[in-house]
Length: 117
Length: 115
View (cartoon, each protein chain N blue to C red):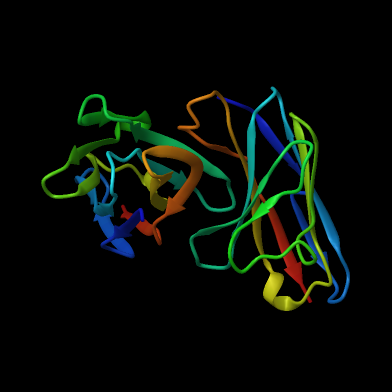
């Protein structure tokens, strides 16, 4: 079965400093992994996705994530935080039945990113 | 990608009543899903809305409580029946365009408060 674990429920950074949101996954097959962001009172927006191409994935708003199979990790990073980055971030893995993608998503518990001025 | 709208965006309802949430997509999509996000929690999949057939429900969710319709490839409804305060949540629909079923796009959500 597939699962994701977000290692921090809350991360606080100062504006202009790097952001690191940690995610570990468990999957029987090569996974498809995603990061979504949810701003207060807004829907979910796709930040980036990994689908077995390049292991370093670049997303929107300066975010990127690196797929590390040896560590079963898919951490999200950004070199310099902006106040507008304050939001809830979800690490997500595609559900699979055997080697086939079912189309369903399995969500981590979320990490709240606080950005201090 | 896909542009998804939901109606209503928010509502306050009395316990024992029902609310139907609509989800409209700007293009035909094969797969549509309904999720629940309880306060301060992550997203939980309620069901997959299948066009022309009954929805497929996840463990812990039943059709009597959450009836779903999917009359065509661009529209679906979720009804929250006989509501209680525990049903207060954000309800989101999502779609997966394309045959690879890789990426899901989400609607803005419906914020429901049950008193």
